[in-house]
Length: 196
Image 1 (cartoon, rainbow, N blue to C red):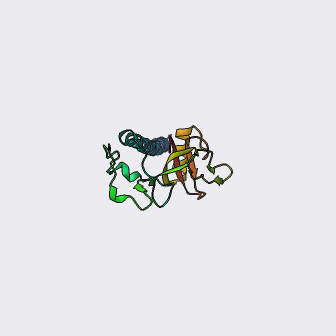
Image 2 (tube, rainbow, N blue to C red):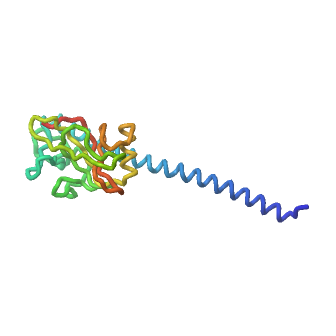
Image 3 (spheres, rainbow, N blue to C red):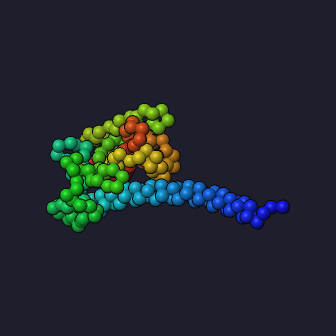
């Protein structure tokens, strides 16, 4: 015959085991939800910058100027402040003083930048561990505007690639991952906007 106290101990252990299993399951679900929220936040920011750029072009009637020192860098601080005729911004709610000399803006997961590159398969081949460098634009080439997000955690970068392109390969589609560092990647989002 079991003692009453021994039975309580067994019940308590079963209850603890059930609660432990539920906490593992809910912890994994919570981690997945947090990761998904980060991916959505990055994708939302990329599309907001693209919309801001398109609004600028519609209002001003021309593209945002490139840097005078480096030809492939776009001065996207002009989306925040500009003296161009027709400008109706600011198109983004960024602090103009936070842009660095390369027109990069500090954001939660790394610096944001706008660049012009040739639209082609480039970036890191995640399977082979090799990378193809982007080709800088020259007049007459198929130059596209890419929005870059520098130094994003590798798992988050792969998730963004998969979210937008349906597969995380690092080179094909709208997302290009760049940098061979095993812990982080630069995300480059092809806006599809031709830079002329």
